[in-house]
Length: 60
Image (cartoon, rainbow, N blue to C red; front, top):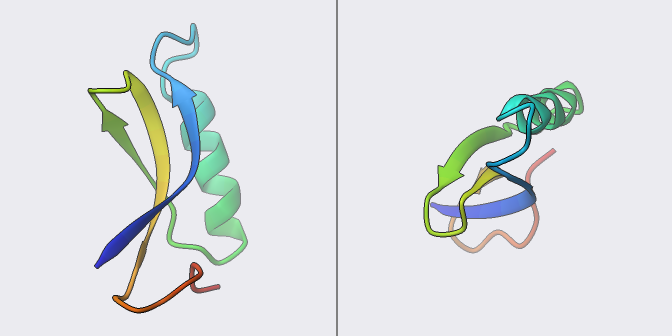
C-alpha cells in the first residue's frame, strides 16, 4: 500500500490536531478513507489516504 498526503497542518497550531481532523472528516464525507497521522520529522499532522500499489489517484 502507498500513502498519499492530501494536506499537512503544523503540530504547533493552537487548535492542535483539530484542524487536520476536521479536514479529514470533510474528505471522508466525500467518500475518501482519509485519516490523520503525525509526522514527527516535519512536526506536522498529515491527512492521508491509502492507495493500492499501482494506483495513481485516491479512490473515491
